[in-house]
Length: 394
Image (cartoon, rainbow, N blue to C red; front, side, top):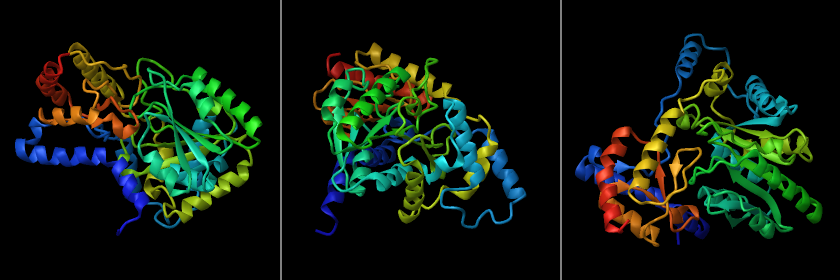
């Protein structure tokens, strides 16, 4: 056996998206890209706002001395001050630059947090369906992932969470808006979760950290407001990147923000800075850090994703597929008309439609549709979805 068994198991758990990518490559080569309807990847389709291009151009035309050298391991001071000011404005809490660590995307940030907090055997509780790489991240640092089912509407089930919390629970991770369901957790829901965690902290006699994976935090539809963990619970940590809201997925610009009242906050932030270094991520890219404070309130036009949501949801609902209408992110997570969601996804490939089975996200009996696609892809996929609906008697 050449590779570690733990890695082989992680590869198997996370193989579905890779398999869809490989199937897409094969089908596009055989039938032409325009005849393959790819709803598999959550790869942002919107270009960054014009301000990003303008600030990069100005930086290249008038480079700052030393801007390509090593920086403090937490990131540039002015960038951390900028992030802290955003946190202040959104929460009213006294965030300072010391509460922020710049990181290499949200994935890098979550690994830094887990490295800093987890001892061997500590439990991380995640709500299923969930982003499949959480398991690998937790395993990287000796932790154990515990899954808790959500409600039929994909909201946190507080009774199930309470039953699953134990003396070994170190972290509860939430993701709102959620991948793969698009569910948005309200402030009221997070308040109740925070109250539950406070009671359990007192019972178990140690901190339980609420880690909020907020990578879709600005992709919220229908005029709703996403809940903020910082307003609900002091031992909370937010991890974010600008992959989605600025369309900069390839630039890996992210940050970790720590609640100003977190237990042993100074030591925790120092640990995050060290882990940023020793894991080899070191820093978010320098040029992206330099321009971030200059972008103001720039965002991609999320109405594009909202319109795609409406178009896809209307189409599949008309054809008889059952789904909860997502409130954010860019995914829909319908019920599979075949109890075997893997079999359904394979049948969809026969119509040149690429989907991902819910099994890959801890949500068997469902499938994920990514809204990172063109209007033409949606329109041209309809005959294939019609044939699927007819095949399954919807």
